[in-house]
Length: 348
Image (cartoon, rainbow, N blue to C red; front, top):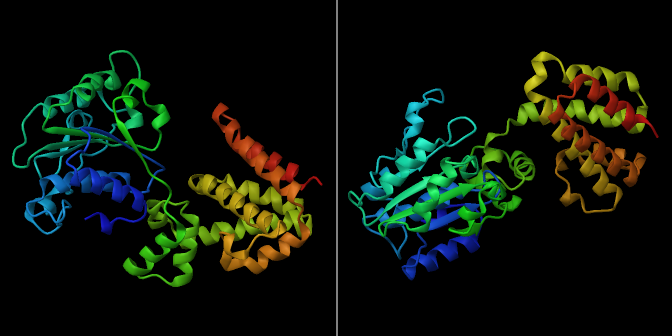
């Protein structure tokens, strides 16, 4: 049932109309940011076809077919041979292609082509989903090209759904053969309500997780709030050192700690937190409502910082951080770059 899915209600209505009119395209592209539920929508659409007791054309989620449809056993990441085949759920008519490392293997796409030409085993159609479709290699004689013929002339009893957060990375010839369904980020209030209804979590925690999620339910569910708050305290001290204390020694010490081996995996998260805090202070300097800031639970701290800040300076800081991020692509030394960033930010 589409109602159990969060957000993108306009897409639910679109899919319902397609089902009611028996006009579901055989090639669909589910495009949108990571973690907004694209794969769940695609699986729910597939379940509507395999369900033994559909309710107004939607899956009942009760029958044996529905219960088997989205149960997958995935191979280990280092088992390349297992990634050369379509991975089927416990229902023989719903399969999934996943990448191995950075690419979807050509052998996997060729296996999908073979599977698409088989008639359904027990349902009225077969469904083959390609997750992270942007990882279809675009070189000659590769996975993307191997898929074109099947998308152009799909068998009448097979449907192919591509799922991607980067439709721009797909070949134009693939895009032209698929009808695209575009997903929007999920509104924070919907994520907050979902967390309150399904998780043992306080209202304050649900609110901040929803605001930090960037519209992604997956991101909200994966966030470690305790770790986040620890890193935020450190980044808050960075802003205090910049705006209140003019304490360059603390800035350089923090840069060193961020680049310590034990903090290597949290470096990017710390930068994102710093950017979020700057955004919040910037909004307050511009007179925006306190409801619009992400870190509402520390708004009093942020208000004090906003009293000392200038919007132009904050905007310049955000630009400097993003410039440094881009420079990391050319093997820039992070420790030296972070020192330079903080000293540059400290300059009036």
